[in-house]
Image (cartoon, rainbow, N blue to C red; front, side, top):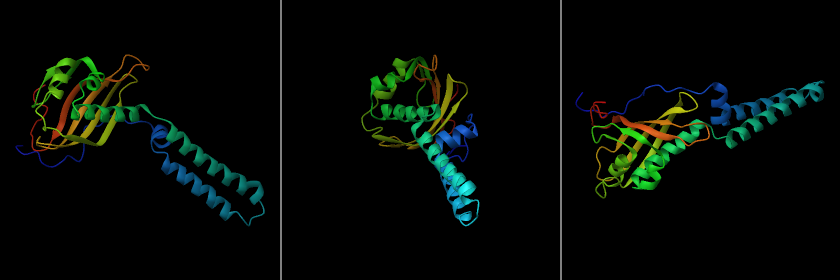
Length: 208
C-alpha cells in the first residue's frame, strides 16, 4: 500500500478492565443515572400502594443513594488506566513543547524508538531527537484519544492519537507506547515507542 490516508477503524487490541472497574470507576455516570432513575420510578409507581412506606420508599431511597455513591466513588477514583492516559498526554506535550527534563523523567534509561523518521536507543538520545528539531516543525500537539491496557500491575501499553500543527506533514497519527514500572509505588516509565499509523506513510514503524 503506497498511500495510507484513511485513519484505521480498529487498532490492535489491548487488555480491558473488568465490568465493575469500567462502569464504577471509569464510567460512573451511566450506572449512577440508571440507579437514580430506578429509585425515582420505584417511589412514583408504588406511591399509592399500601406497602409504599414499608417497601417502596426505602427501596427508592436506597437506589438513589447507591447511584449517588457510585458517581461519587467514580469521580474521586483515578484508575491506573486513567493515570496512564494522563501520563501519555504529558509525554506528547513534553515533545511538542521541547521540554527535555519533563520528557526524560518519563523515559526508561534503555527506552527504544522505532520509526521510519528516526530510530534510537537510550533516553538521552531520544530526548535529543525529540527536542532539537528545527523550529516550527511541531508548533503544538493535540491528544485526541488514548487507549490504555494493563498486562500486569507493572507492564502496560497506551495507544495515542496525535494531531500536530506546524510544518510537519502528515499531521495525524497513532502511536504505541509501552510502559513499565519497578513496583506499584514507582512511576510508569516508557520502554518503547513506535507509530501504529501515520497519515500518508506506509509502514511507519519501519523494520524492528
